Image (tube, rainbow, N blue to C red; front, side):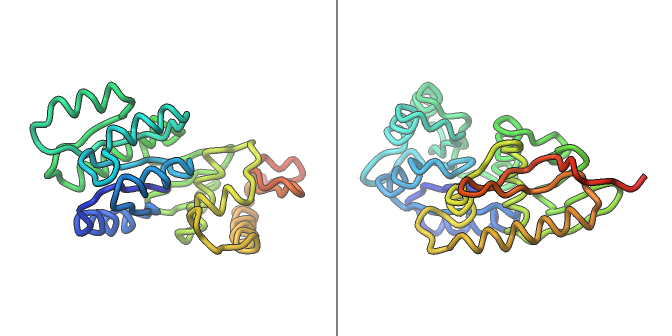
Amino acid sequence: MRILIIEDESQMAEALAQVLRKDNYSVDLAFDGEHGLDCALAGIYDIIILDIMLPKIDGITILKELRKCGIRTPVILLTAKGEIEHKVEGLDSGADDYLAKPFQTRELLARLRALGRRSGELHYDNTLRFEDVEYNPYSLDLRCRGKTFKLTLKEGQLLELLLNNKMMILPTTTIIERLWGFDTKTEDNNVQVYVSFLRKKLKQLNSIVTIRAIRGAGYVLVKNEDVTRDV
């Protein structure tokens, strides 16, 4: 899951990013509203954590602009304690949740999990499922027919992206943006490498799921009709 934090208190933002990365989230930071809006409009994030009080462009304005442009990414607003009017305005403008500062990181993590379940297909046991495959994005465990592989972070992020868009062709450029960011210098062959890693692990698990390459289009997670499973 890729998260954008738009927060001008750099020390707080960096500390929060460190906590989230330990929980296997991919995190990008923006320290002012102008940069934050540019990042958010890329549409590559699963959740945005947005402070209301920001230099250049305030959080409410960012939120309204995102919704106006059709960006439906779930947004958690960060507000100062007691800012009832800002909370109400934020929720009315399209925010999905809010947290009053100061807050406990475990509460934020719980709200992120809740939004992940609401916006995707993450079940209450934190597991994504497709056919005979189960994947837990928090533990990085890939399971199939009683066997388990521990994925690397990038393998897990790729599988999570494919599971959340199963049966849909994802362009290579989209995968690169979601996994490495829109300003990365990562090339197509990096995606090919991680697709190959995942294919091998799915095959070792004797799964009926595979990643199919569509020439000139991208990759898609599908049921492999050609696989003969052991019984």
